[in-house]
Length: 356
Image (cartoon, rainbow, N blue to C red; front, side):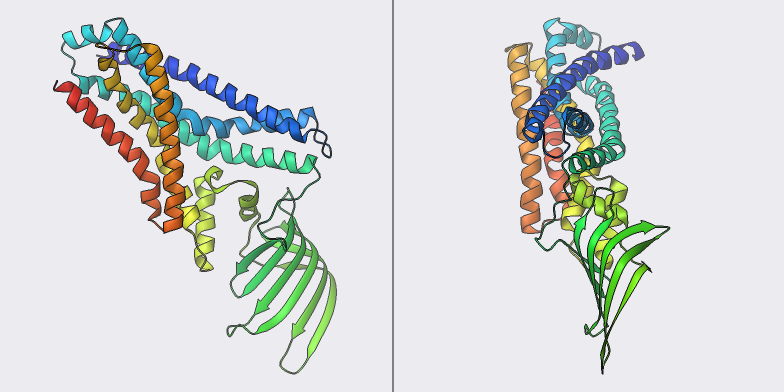
């Protein structure tokens, strides 16, 4: 049994690996072509383009693993069926359910691999890639509003006009309110950098509103304690889908403490936890096609079907995310339904094939 398990999982893993390499190559090629359009802007040279493209690879790996698992599994099922190996295995007393259980370990391996890449590697590489691109193009982080980034911090509202690639700030405006939301002070600073658990502001002008008078003062520098941390600025460099689960949890807690909407980040967090499980669902989904192969079709048809089904899964995954955000669905539902559908179909197909 152990020998058979090793053999089946190896036969499954090899085509998955090569299909993954092929898909990554395609994504990398198109990334390179796209980045060539920005060549020459600022100091964005060929080395910068190459560095950006290479650092973007982990993000692509995370995205394409379930598709590669599906296509590779369907191809491997076809190979085993074409060589009549499934017939021999079943004649030896192994049921389809037992074969499915054995092959699910390959899905488990790629599940752990996907989670590790998505949670440990991609957030770091994606942030570094964006830093290289922004710095080389002499740009700043793009903000949602023309006036810059707006952040709520307890009873204060902070407007940051520019966030630099190293997470330092420039042109900062802090509006402090009391508990009745009466304006108490406006603080303007040219620069802000995070040191030893607090911000250091430089070139400060402050206007203080008392009940009977308005006073102003200037400071060369001052320390500013705030709930805002540089890690939160990474949200501007890295999309929520490519942040680590711990960063998402910290940012969600921050938003909740400031009574702000967290749906987008909760969906991203649940996707981060659920999406890797798609590899197991894809293996189970592909297994019945190996027995279907015994009666009709060929490997080329199987690969073509795998590509179409993989694309459909990605479209469905994205659709549930955006429709869920628009309609305020439960974040867990948005993340789990596409994978659950494929998992359920795979289990039902295995059961049906077993009893035919």
